[in-house]
Length: 131
Image: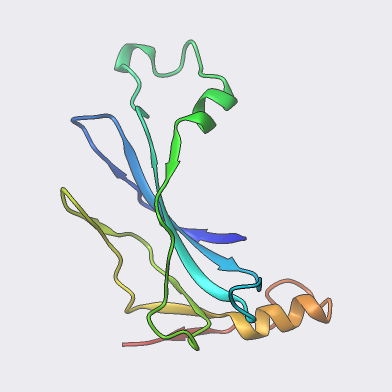
C-alpha cells in the first residue's frame, strides 16, 4: 500500500528515463507480524517525448505501465520504527538515489488504529518533525 512519492522525480536527459521513490506500508505477513514502512524505487524507461510530438500521438496507458521497472524495496534500519518518512525530493548520483530521512515522518500507528476502528481518514495522523 503506497501512500507517498517524491514530488520531484529525476529525469535522465541522456536516456530519457524518469526515476522516483515511493513510500509504502507493507502489511503483516508470514515474515513479519506488524506493518512496516518500506520504500520502493522505480524508473519509467524512455519517458521522454520528442518536443515536436509531446501532445500528439499519446501512448496507451498499458504501454506506459509496461515501461515501469521497480527496484528492490528497502526498510527503516530500526525494525521497531513504524514511521514512514515523507521526503519532498531526493538526490541522485550516477549509481544511487539518496533519500534524506531527516525531515517529516508519518506515524503509522494512529493511521492503522484509525483503519481498524473506521475513523475518518487522517483524523488521527500526526506529523512529527525530526532533526
